Length: 275
Image (cartoon, rainbow, N blue to C red; front, top):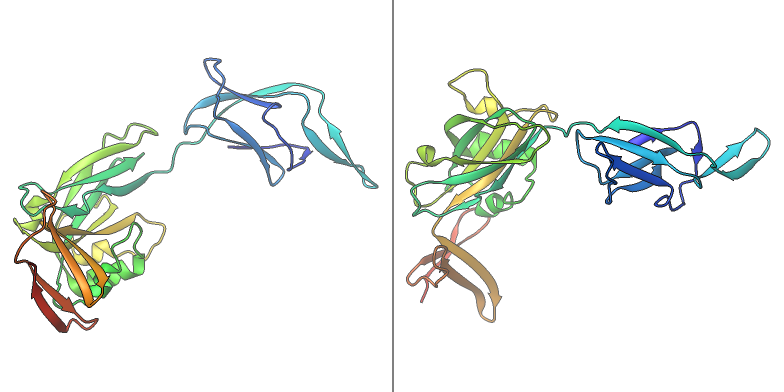
């Protein structure tokens, strides 16, 4: 939160003893940190949509310029003002459920939202045969590139279905909502999917085009989701690549699991079984 003033406040100064912030009940905000940015007095550590009072004490260094010379002065008055911080910008993110156990009847993902009433969630099945594996796993990140996700959905996926997810939408409160997507994945024990979250759709019978937006200001959140009972880790070994396969439920090594090494073009280079 920043305040516009008619004074040229010096940026390099300690304002901790000159600026105090209080809640509406009179208690002081201990985590408030005052600083100067672009000739504005700013305070960090405040909550969204909350009423505060700020008190400016004596001792703030300002620069005064009378047109001929500049000099540094120190304020010698006390002033106080009330204000309300802005509401947090509405947002949604996929917070949990990027790897789902294949043996579980329910496939639960978790959406984290704030100041959002509802969204539409789409579930896409990715064809593993037509997509190079290295390209696929390159998209497994916290914030995959929008362009890459659009291309993946358009060229290598099939829309399984969509549903509306409603939130309680308590103002400026982070909310976590569990969503079961098992109705779309049809009991798959393994597979690669894309979850796509868009603004609440105003019609049914959605198509792939509804989830591919070129308006970067619109809500469009997508992430890869894996359904599997196996966790795979690969290492550079002395004689090639060492691969460890474990059961995700019990974290135990899995015997006789088939491991396939593929090239960037999806050509099979080697196939082995775990011991």
